[in-house]
Length: 142
Ligand SMILES: [Fe+2]
Ligand SMILES: [Fe+2]
Image 1 (cartoon, protein in one colour):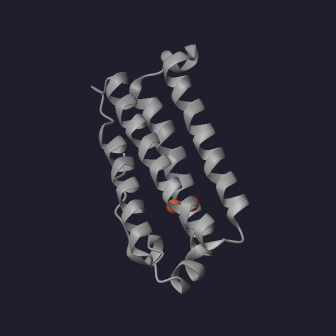
Image 2 (image 1 turned 90 degrees about the vertical axis):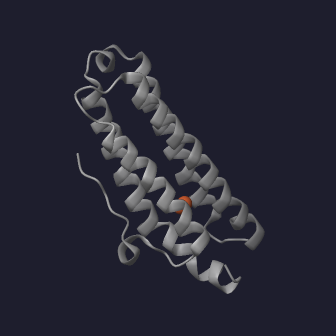
């Protein structure tokens, strides 16, 4: 499984508060990636998935509070993307614990699926949506 190194040029958006949180998100995503060995236990993976859900929610709250404070024009659609991510992610987490087809899969396969989903979402969201609020945040000295 690949370890994804933070890259300031392609992932950084130039707002320190947000970049710091994105780095922490990537750190947890990598932790998930590194936990994938043939000895992985389902519970270990779930613990990391939970850590990721909690930190993602904290990070989304940070962005959204600033959207409200600064009257960000794309606030509604951006918040909707966050909600969709949380819903999909929580559904994925439930599948790991409940769905028979997932229960029968090895922990390695499950982690790979979760990992790829999260990583793609993360990279697309940062460069696609998060970059759009940079101008406004900078104008407000963030
Ligand atoms: Fe973000
Ligand atoms: Fe965001």
